[in-house]
Image (cartoon, rainbow, N blue to C red; front, top):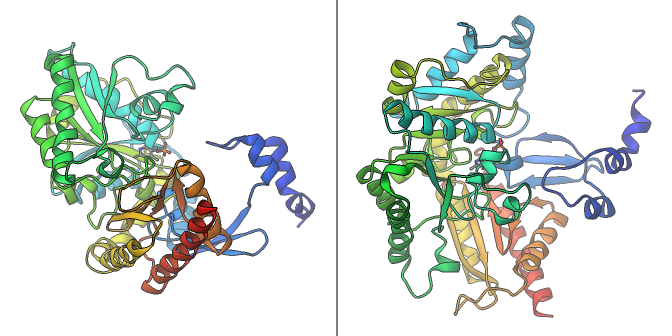
Length: 455
Ligand SMILES: *Cc1c(COP(=O)(O)O)cnc(C)c1O
């Protein structure tokens, strides 16, 4: 191959020409970027040939694992038959329409219509407009405000980053945009004080009611949250949280938006995260696991209540993307869902590998550096602590997380550190032996972290 010389020099070329997402380029260029060349199952391989167990499924997305030839073939067939057509001008393509039906079939009959996007961020921008349009059509144009949560992640577009609750993101680009308000997150370990988790869950849920009162019920359009906050650190809410949130949204007549971009497509042992928690959203952005990341595609699911307005009353919805419902991406997503169905991956997460993973993770709670562990299905977090008895956290929690993560990486395990929480989101096909390896390597990382943080 005549591009070999370029490949051997890829890190230098990357340093010269590529601006990475969410990266400090000066630091990255000094450290040197890792080049990932291939992958199979739950393993990725870098350009030195080193193999890693990817306990993070890429970026929370490779639910069916790497190397699925069926998905590549489905995309290839579609690309040869019809590489592109839009759904703007009274047209659609077979995979686009069949995908809409297929997604709806996994929502217990509740979310029967979908608008397609290319990413989760675009899904955020899309439902944000839909929520406002919905109330306007119903004769309540003043219902425009959206309540979201601190430390939430809803994407990187202007609306996505504004809805998200990351201060450091808001500081870049003068965000949030007008009309978005944030309340607290159900992060008991850090913020629960002397309350029990159950009491704390109720308390932070009721912040929603207080915020609605403060802003005026007749001005609030929607509340958005991830069933489990992902990028914020896999913040798993106390059991009291979601029932109270759902009650408040219903009582106060505001739309409930469940950001299913991570929790959708099997991760919690249900098709969607809201099914695990037993609430019914009006809008639900999706992406990531929809195609297991093989091709970019996302969307917004809507309840019949919202669809009725969008379909029967609105007229034109002046919103869409050139690649909304892209046929090749839709074909890949259809094949991805077929695999999840055929291999019973949702049930596997719920009944088999999820409980096994939970038990493995729980075994780390005896480690002096571990404050608590939490998981649902195949998403989990290890909360680091400087003093597990008092729930005291490390002064430099960032460093504690990085030390553990880097040691794991050296030992062939990819996981993520968000501050002082170690995050797991492996492919849904991970085996028991691979879960054991994840836990063993994490324990070594913790031993290392505990030692260096004590020095
Ligand atoms: C990743 C993510 C998004 C954004 O999706 P992109 O495809 O990266 O734009 C939105 N919401 C949640 C919960 C996410 O995890």
